[in-house]
Amino acid sequence: MPLERIQMIMTDLEKARFNMAEQQIRPWEVFDERVLRVMQEVPRERFVPHDYLELAFADLRIPLGHGETMMEPKVEARMLQALEIRPTDHVLEVGTGSGFVTACLATLGNSVVSYDIHEDFIQSATDKLARQGINNVHLHLGNPLTLENLPKEGFDVVAVTGSMPFYDPALEAVLAPGGRLFQVVGESPVMHAMRVTRRGDEFVQDYLFETDLPPLRHIPEPRHFRF
Image (cartoon, rainbow, N blue to C red; front, side, top):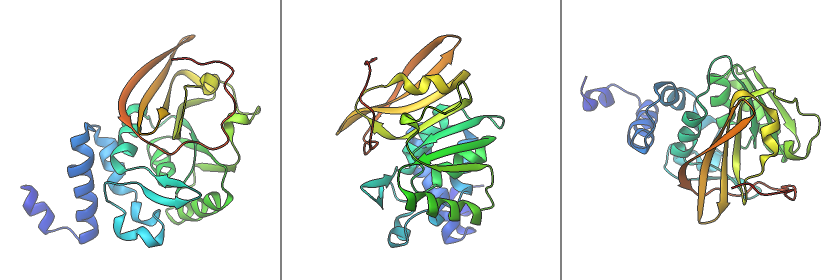
């Protein structure tokens, strides 16, 4: 069916989601159909702050408060694609934020453990996820980079939704064999998104694309650097 015909029979909301996927996300080299589908099916407008509702599907970062933002939809989608999330995967998210990415991770994977340092973000995300019937997420207040009780080799996927000035290998300890870690490293205005894959006892780094994200807060001092 021609694109124009599809758009004619859609509601305005459906059209906005469709255009986000086809005009923003797919041209940014996102071809994974599961990712494209989840970006359309999870109602992004229900996770956006009310004052920014009209910009829910725009190609820009949306302020959340505390100096934090929602990533652009295309960056969220590239992250999800890079993580290659399977239905059996257990996911750790560093930075709950609005809860939208949390919802996408939970839809693609088996379960999600998500941390944020802002209590109001946790409370808001808890309510929004519940309204969507998403019950395979466990939200926690705190910084997993400073916690000692995280399970070792327990996560197939680790998604870090804020940037770090350096690559800190601390989260490698929680990756299961074959696990994938997404992290944005560098300083504004140019940062690099990277995926780290555990292959046996080795951790293979792949640089994916350039971007710019607000930094994670309260990052521990690095013990050593790895580039």
